[in-house]
Amino acid sequence: MKLPHKTLNYIAQHLPGLAAPAKKTTELPQGKEYTIDELARACDTTVRNIRAYQDRGLLAPPELRGRKGYYFNSHLARLRVISGLLDRGYSLSSIKDLIDALENGIDLRHLMGLESAITSPWTDEEPILVPMTELIKMFGAYLTPEALARATDLDLMKPEGAMVRVRSMRTLRAGAELVATGIPLEELLDIVRMLRGNVERVANELVRLVGEHVLSNYETEELPPQEEFPKLADLVWRMRPLAEMAVHAELARAMENAASRLLSDRLENIIERMAREKDSK
Image 1 (cartoon, rainbow, N blue to C red):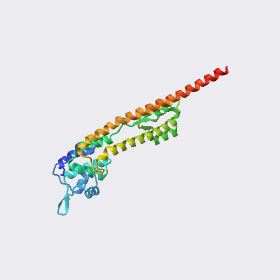
Image 2 (cartoon, rainbow, N blue to C red):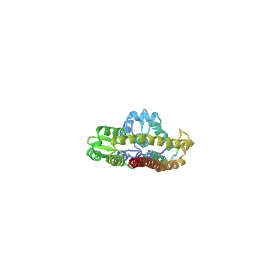
Image 3 (spheres, rainbow, N blue to C red):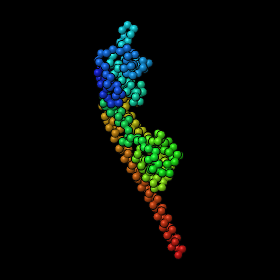
Image 4 (cartoon, one colour):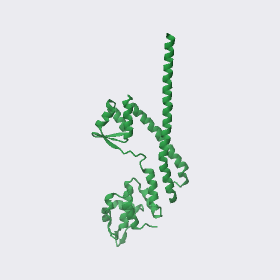
């Protein structure tokens, strides 16, 4: 089943993220004909790209009249979909799979719902630009060039002239409060590196379990059945708070145990010192 050009036009114009906003307003009258050069200009691409898409089966061939080929709005709409998906990081082979799925009747809303669940940020924080002077106020003499380089290497921040792009202000403020107690910043960065390694291992294992016990029900080279998309999207969305709660609970338990051991050792040392002082009298 081939999608009609009206449907493709709708996808290109109204599906968030699939087409650049500027291109949404350049819809041309139905039935307009294009040479390959005109089509390339209308979609802000190249003749070479159009021919490559045709070779890969992504774009239908033109209508030939004599030795000249003519394209229509259906081609323009398809090109907009391809360009939008390329901008989102899809490969040409993935785009072909998606377009084939659409032409076979897959509900695009369900498919994009699953894609959104997987690719949406897992945090509500956005990177923010902070003046370097503000960081100096927060960390004082602890903000050495070495510490800044290590924080940059950990992708916690990125200097941009007199500003610094901070990935997480919550993490930054927590670090500043700990540094204010006298803990060296570079030692805190060691903990961040250690924490990240452990958390990434946990994340990889959780994803592996989903792949092994949930996605293994489907063929690896094919999309799941259309009716399964909402269930899979819901699973991904539910994994987010569940994973956060599990990590938070385990970290809280570990902190409690570590603090108890520290307090116990301190109390034991105090009791031993008091006993020695008593015996010496």
